[in-house]
Image 1 (cartoon, rainbow, N blue to C red):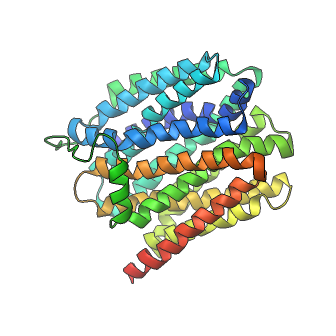
Image 2 (tube, rainbow, N blue to C red):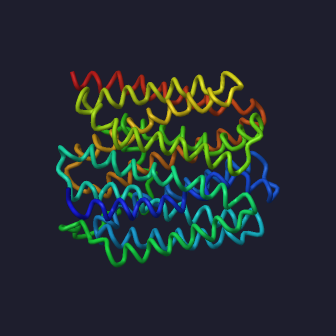
Image 3 (cartoon, rainbow, N blue to C red):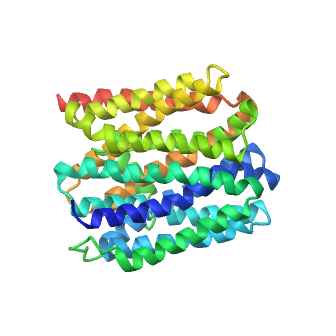
Length: 387
């Protein structure tokens, strides 16, 4: 293993640990600032819309200037956003914090994925992209439960601790993490504009269109449940910050196990395309059955099934994209992340708009529909192409 990979793992883990400490708290925090369900959906969507606008730009900048400067910029912006949220006196200031954090997060996962692509062979790429996704999940395993306990006595402390964790990460990156890009782009290509509406349109119509849609559907699933789960568990199971933190930690553990241990074995046994197919199928089954019965045990069990499916499908889609990219890994990963960000915009909005009208189960059923569309498209196009 390249010695830079463990250093990147540490960088990503510390970053996502801070994020994981606070993200399950946002719906409950927003309620204390008199937010409606629609406000909560818009709050989550504002974070993702900022990601959507800026991830291709940051990806292109990383191709031009290197991966490390963009990662450092993102950590600094994350730290600022945590400090702002810690003392947010109003919903408006909380929006500002979320938008800044959205910009910051656009420079973490896609750039980390590009970093992995820089230093690994195509043969090993799926394995290491799966493990970097597993490191994200590991952060979600520990972060939410820490944040839940810290948030049981108020919301300021978790955000302050997250800011301190982010500052420690900044020091670590500055000293320890080397640059991965050996041949930087001679110039930034911005002919389609600073932002990426045109790129997204062409990306959806291009050779990678189905894969991009799968990333959109995965992120729709994530965006939906980040809004719906804290409210669902509060209403049906009287769950507070601690219980929510434990739930997200359990799902993070399931994703970590799937990505670190199951994924390499499954890909080796059945190949990347079938792994994607089975992963999406598990997501659909888990989401469909999780809310049919008003049982906390069944809700946990079926949601873990969907999380395992997520852990199998998302990193494999990214690996297939990366292997098919000949030049500009940062640009491709940035565009892929834009589709994820778009899903995280639409998902929370659907949850926020529909919960009050159709009930707390509706976001989960909407996710089933979107994932099923992605499954059908993937089967018709990619699986037939592979035969």
